[in-house]
Length: 134
View 1: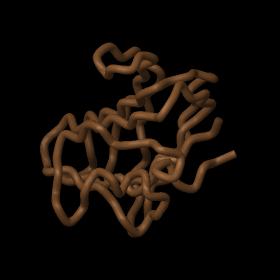
View 2: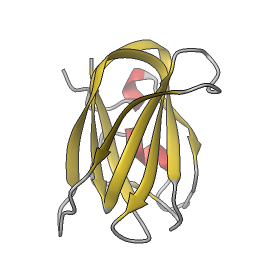
View 3: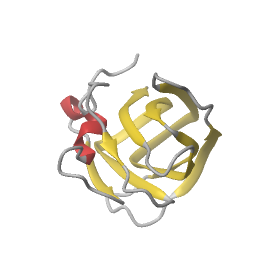
View 4: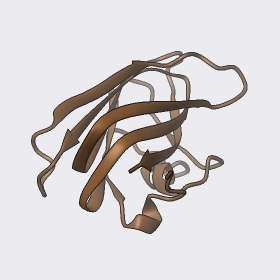
């Protein structure tokens, strides 16, 4: 089942590599693809989402624009210090509409997910929504 809003489940964006007051990182988890977080133009860019408790995750869906390569890492402790690689994906470029990609997390459980955008199709990228399948 895909959750409409990670924010409503108590998830928080605890780290973001860049911050634009008009497009804050919290927009990633509000469940609305019309709002978004935007990078400031250099790579890599990253953000970390913290769940209230250990959460089982079978996959994650990322709605974004201009993201070329994305890595996903997980953490299972209360502090976000040591992450382990879970998946990575090369995303196809889309013109005029969002990229929507499901990425398998192989039945992982996590307290934190770190998303690392290693490259984009342009200097600026945006992430509109992250949803998880449990």
